[in-house]
Length: 117
Image (tube, rainbow, N blue to C red; front, side, top):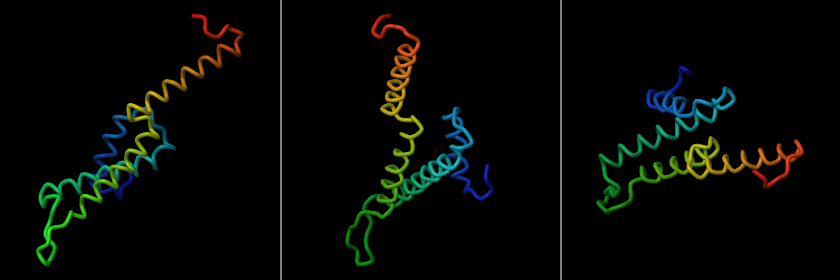
């Protein structure tokens, strides 16, 4: 594990490696980015829990906390990466569909009739 990771990012990366055991060395950069996004989301969430979603401006007007935008952006970017790793229900379903198509192509090449069990 790289030495320059924050404790929170290192913790998230460890969790990701446990959850995605089939990842390879080439996946390391994507997993690091995903871990960092997850850590950023957690930090933003802690600030929101402490300060609330609505905060007061210096002139005492209510405004939405900047941490909410940070949290949402990190979540959006993390979901995009999770899809790439097949770590969402929809992306896993697509992987299964592609596997089924591959089997059908292999059957066709082997001379088996398609559509017969």
